[in-house]
Length: 99
Image: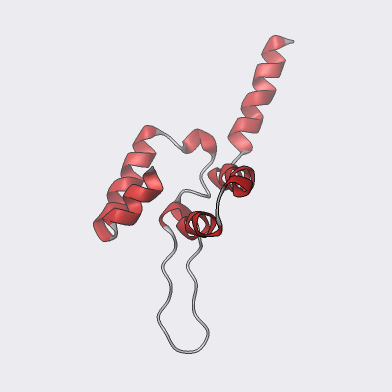
């Protein structure tokens, strides 16, 4: 029975995405954050947007690239590759997102 429980927990862990965990994190922390802090966290994970009318596309937040990953795929190597890629175009945002 313990092995069956472990396997069931592993199945759940493998099904949960970083996006699921991020949403739960935002929901849990929102009561403790001010509006600015909440908006900063939302911006870190926002999807790319195409503005209405004139203007250039808005780049996705640095964490957006991680959201589709399953938690089991969020390894040290995956984070290092993500950090390296993000740091090439926006080192400050990448460092903030990493923290």
